[in-house]
Length: 154
Image 1: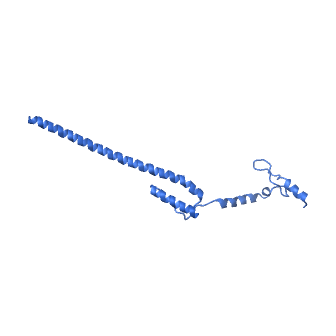
Image 2 (image 1 turned 135 degrees about the vertical axis):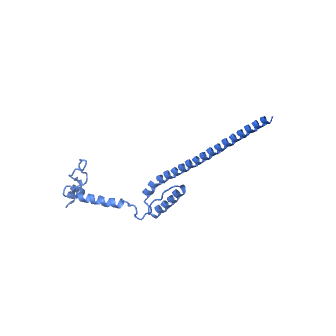
Image 3 (image 1 turned 45 degrees about the vertical axis):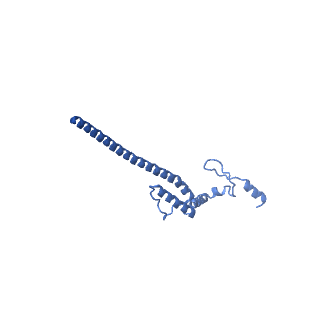
């Protein structure tokens, strides 16, 4: 093949049509089609290979995430995930996805703890008010009895 024939092959475009219906813009081979239109199975094979290499499966022996019921458990899980990330056991995207969820869990735990503490304080306040009312009623009764006893003595 001389230089003029090589140049003509480079200048030629593939004669196939893309999925969109537009002409393929790739350079044509000797058969008039680009490499992928001439070998359609090759494109899907290469796509599968690329997809497999990028896909990450969860490790089968990975420990399940614990139930997080307090701030200490969240702190411990964060420390474990940081260690796993640093050791290469955890993909950075998974860690990035878990971070806002753990933050949400921590805020929910804090809000729940605060609600629990407020409920306990309100319960104690109600008991204290009830005891105070009983004491005032007892004082009023004893004061009324003492006043009635003094009138009877007169």
